[in-house]
Length: 255
Image 1: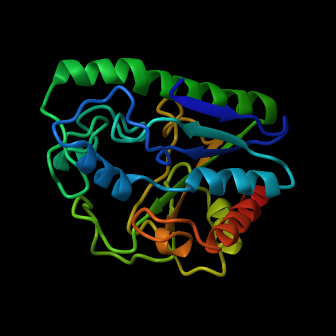
Image 2: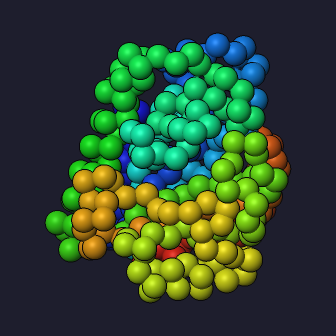
């Protein structure tokens, strides 16, 4: 399986989505060397966000569900739009990346390969996430998707919106799916951190089947600046990881 689901309590509407924590590139082929692939992974992996989500889940009063990607975003990025509407296609980082963090080419252009990756990885992943959201809706009447990401303290060349603030915590919101009460709960939970909304990254992940259609599906993206919990770019976690996880647990309980 290219993903793993860790069950929460039956009455929890919260799903912690962890899409970019894996370094596994199983089955992917690149035109760069293995050492260059490792460098790409060092910069593009949201390292330890899986640990943060699991630790937060264990500390929550009502355990949330966790949906975790088991493949690196260098294989397929499950959070991109799979068509021309995805703005990151402008730098070769649509659902299937042809370029990396420094805009270096990783793969040749190959629509046949891309379609195969979408068929075998992207669509099954999206279907499973859609099913989990549907199950939470059926069980609780609502679903809250909290996307757990991280980002570097210094902007990388691929970023399209790198000129804005880079706070300790970025809260990504969506005009349709992020109600003010959820954004306020996140601000309270992460009150010890400097926060900014939608900078340097914006928006929140919702499965396409519910996107801009289901107001009972709410969503928020948590982007943690990596120097708050680890040694960049690919070093060990620090004591800050516990602090971030505790804040995320407070958000889960308030959501």
